[in-house]
Amino acid sequence: MEIAFETLIASYLEDKIGIATKFISDDLAQHLRQNLLKLDFQKALVAAGTGNEAKFVRNDKVRSDVIYWLDKSHNNAYETEFLIHIEAFITYLNESCYAGITGYEFHYSLYEKGSFYQKHVDQFQDNSSRAFSMICYLNENWKIEDGGELCIHQFNSNQHISPTQGKTVFFKSDELEHEVLITNERRMSVTGWLRRD
Figure (cartoon, rainbow, N blue to C red):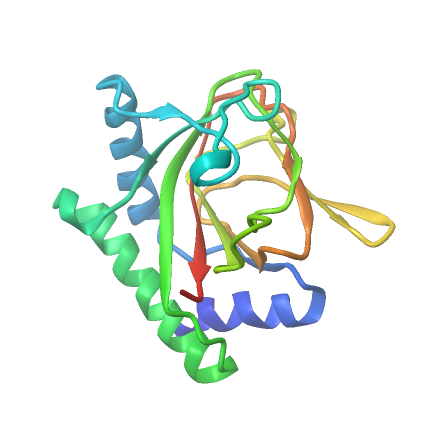
């Protein structure tokens, strides 16, 4: 577990974009994917939006994914296992980097074929509590032609990251503009933020 944590942190310190290919196990990723598909079948997911509180708006010309917030109160063994894993990472990050993280929020994210999310940053203009963004992908046997890459805009270049199962991406929420390119297949992840509340 600590090896994956250190891989994510070390690559972030080197490049401002942390990537670990096995941050979560294949077994956990498969269970989370099955749970997400079950929730989708039950129509529990809702259209995602942008902004917070009074500024919240849904606009499928900006983003067209659907989401479901994770919470231990759901009493789902795999959601809870994932969140405990995140808590362990936060402890490791705070102890090794003095990051000062005090909380987190995560949701499932499902992009159907043809869906996307235009260029944006993750931190709200009127609330700086989101410190780091994290995306954990749940897509088994993902191919280049499936699209749906995370495109991170950095300096004068773009980095394209394929959303393959088990891969986790980590970066500062207020620093890097990024977008989800149009996906040609159903694309799934657990996406969230480490917070300083």
